Image 1 (cartoon, rainbow, N blue to C red):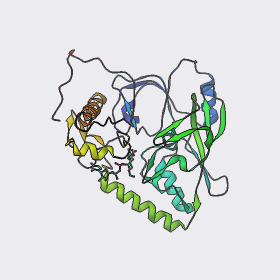
Image 2: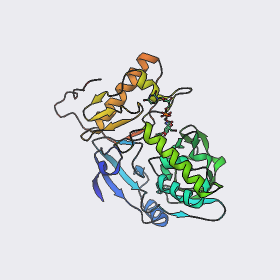
Image 3: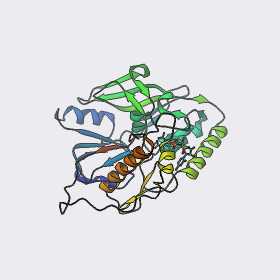
Image 4: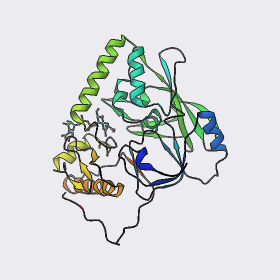
Length: 298
Ligand code: EPU
């Protein structure tokens, strides 16, 4: 597919067109596709499109959508689940509840796929994705597949290093067997806690900023009086300061400008430079009249 709007593929519902979108049927199909790709063609991997801001001018190269073809959940034996990169974390959490596998309850509140959660070591409620990893399957841009051990990566808070030039196509995740009803009850509690503190159901990317050491981005944004700050259709959530919601008509440039405004205000008032967690990609649109867009209240 060519020239496809990314607004349909991101949880913020914004973004210009992708030059080319490829939806693999399965991992073998993906490997063949990559083997035939030119060495310089940029690739953007997209699962559910959370944690991603695509600029209004769109993205060049190829967007690979993982949610369909890499969406298999298998049970290779033991309390292990083999999850494809395209499996939504919430769907995986439901399987864990049905099986009675403890340790992955937090996945119910991660708004993306297993591939995204692996790439950024997504976490919540004191747990993180790589705590579960036994091994991961990767693919490189020539389509070569490989199983790799956890120790081959450098894992930190919301960061995963090592193995540049490879992408995750799936993982074997290990859990602890327990009474399924107890796992489900804990998962439900976490879902309720999230709904009470985050703007669930509104268009957002999840958390915008990483938490700085020893503090919380949401608390700092709140303390600076930035809740409700708006540029165009992009608003800092009144419910949680680390969320920016699209009230319907936001553009990616509204959102990007609001991120910059929040960051600079928090820095001026507290000295903390918040680092965005969200990935920003693509081309800016040239301003229509040569003037910057006016902002709203801040
Ligand atoms: N707080 C405020 N005002 C706000 C928001 C939060 O004062 O507007 C305070 C809270 O009262 C609390 C503290 O900040 O004392 C932390 O808030 P919260 O419990 O909501 O956790 P968080 O650090 O903001 C992290 C993850 C979330 C995850 C939650 C739940 C990061 C950047 N965010 O949020 O992850 O769901 O914990 O465990 O680590 C995500 O990464 O997309 C995400 C949603």
